[in-house]
Image 1 (tube, rainbow, N blue to C red):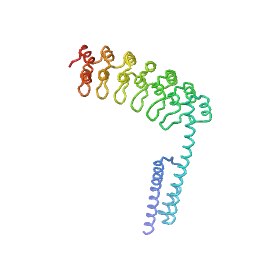
Image 2 (image 1 turned 180 degrees about the vertical axis):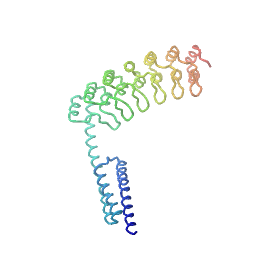
Image 3 (image 1 turned 135 degrees about the horizontal axis):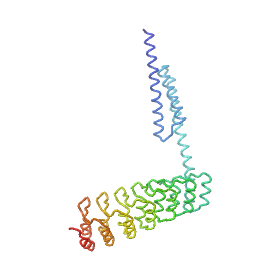
Image 4 (image 1 turned 90 degrees about the vertical axis):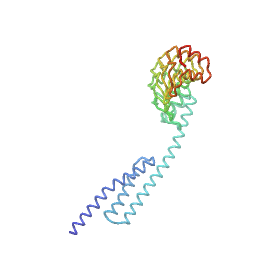
Length: 322
């Protein structure tokens, strides 16, 4: 009976050991991942020592050897963290130096220097602290030849920075038609949005770049796409008083009655800002003069509140109700 009891206890100890070892491994790996370290040799070695400690404690009942295994595991794990940290610091130092050298050459438009650095295996999609890539810097600074070189070397034309901007957005903001055209020819997605839901078309419209707006529309830009606040390219163009862009957007099918999240329409915005010509243009293109925002205000009420009497009279002339 005693032998049977001892056998059962022995089996129970082995079962406990087998069950605990994977748990220890998971804990070690989880800690390393939490410290932004990739589990590898250090994790395996530490895990082995911890399991060895469990073996001596549970199976052999040798506390001294169990303690030794525990100390060994902790030591290996800590040295792994220290080593990884040192390696990371060294890597970042050289990474930063290479990154800055490449970006400086790009900002100067020094194509030969950029080519030299790329031939020396400089990272083509390396990022600065704002998440911007070499291609974004080239597009922003208007260096078409550098843009061509970077794309030829494999730069991602649709990558985004920390704000969600793409190379196309930088070029569109600056009205750089050659780079816009080049990026689109090389596969840039014309309708990608930044973290606020804004597109290259919205940026070009907000800045009054009629030529860029026209080119983007020709290449398939969604004229009615709304950002996170419900604003369209037409609304941004109105807000900033870009009449020619407004006319172009309407001609290309912009919805004059679309509302933002507050229920505002382009007509309400134009009435609020006092843009008489814009108000007339909208009315002539089917804007609903009696539409109400979320607070029950119409374009007439908004114009009156802001003291734009000429717009009040114009709205009444077109049939706006009090």
